[in-house]
Length: 390
Ligand SMILES: *Cc1c(COP(=O)(O)O)cnc(C)c1O
Image 1 (cartoon, rainbow, N blue to C red):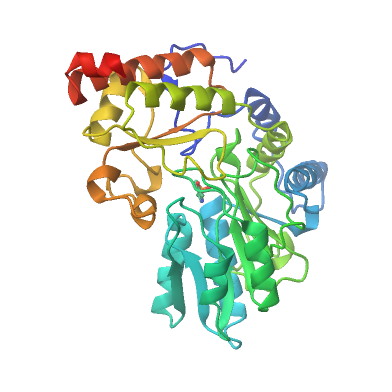
Image 2 (image 1 turned 30 degrees about the vertical axis):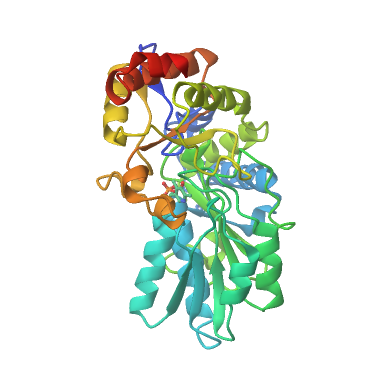
């Protein structure tokens, strides 16, 4: 029914978004047509059916990250979740203090929320990271003051895939009596996430980063964690987020979460890709390569060749990758993440991001290797003997 066969380019930009899993689409469709009720309508079966779908998805998403259904607040995506957690906690706790801690490598949804709060009188510390791109628990501890109320540190980085020691950071935050928000968008479905085990108060998720639709996300709020609602209106989501629930999207999110329980088994493909690219260009750098990181991500430089040139050449070869975070595009080459790691600007401008997904095939990797090799030989190092010797 929805099986449109087109010859599409190879997509390897799964940190920007992922294709919707066919099972997800099938689960969503009835909620647009046959059972289109408002989940808050209590007077007829359309409403009850919609509510049942929303509640079933709560269990499915909760199971993925070890939270209970009632801790889930549906949102329009992780941007809203990040805004709601940080603003909602900081404003609720502002009589206790006005200091927020985050990191320079966070997603824009976190950084820009913090910048906005600075305009409103909050003070924000943007922690630097180590050469491996990770935030240390010691740096969080050193930044904490009596006025610190909120700490927001992501689980896995969207540009380089490095994983922060969130459990250690959570212990420090708890010891100091602050609350802890974790943007887990890129970790969920790719690594085990245990909401309660991590000592986290708020956790952001987005459906479209693991086979779900865009426009739906969740903020997981620990039972009893402070939160000032931002949107006002109906009493949906136990007064934590007003607005009619996106029933079809939520149903799809639930099925995507269930499918994501199986994990993403692409580490061997990613490792082969990196090994081959490093063989072609021994002076290429894999950023965060020695750190704990996601198995689907490669951020690698081609010395002397601008990222845009690589992205265009790969596009001509029918392969889609990116020159960094999609959300910061338009400013290609200005990766704040690589800058925070101490990578020189000129070198950072030669780094591309390859992010594999559930539909990446071994053959796709071979095509990428071949196209990258062609470019390297042609543009960067036209001295063929050098390339062959490598
Ligand atoms: C994509 C992404 C977001 C934003 O999610 P949306 O659902 O697209 O708003 C937030 N944080 C990280 C780490 C992301 O990769």
